[in-house]
Image (cartoon, rainbow, N blue to C red; front, side, top):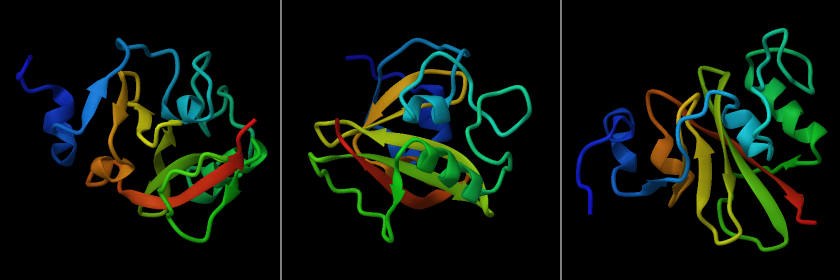
Length: 144
């Protein structure tokens, strides 16, 4: 087993030992696209990128993106597995969106770390902190 420290361990100390890398670095898509189920393009509120909502860095704009995809905002941050629903956790810091992660059918979570690797992680909380802020809300939609 490789026990060397990664950049992820240094950046997200609360994630150490709670994730595994599931892809090579790929700058063609980001966490928002990945949480939405796309690996074809980068999603951003900046002009020139896909963003199916009013363009803004505010967390409300990211909520609107996922609402446009059929997700509904939940009044709590219920992170438990519900086999009938897909869930995404949306992160914010200072009212600005920072990250999104998606729950897998087995209850673990998956994220794309900017232009870097995709990872599978035990909980979405292990990526809360100075970089991504906190989980602002959890959204869900019925599984197909």
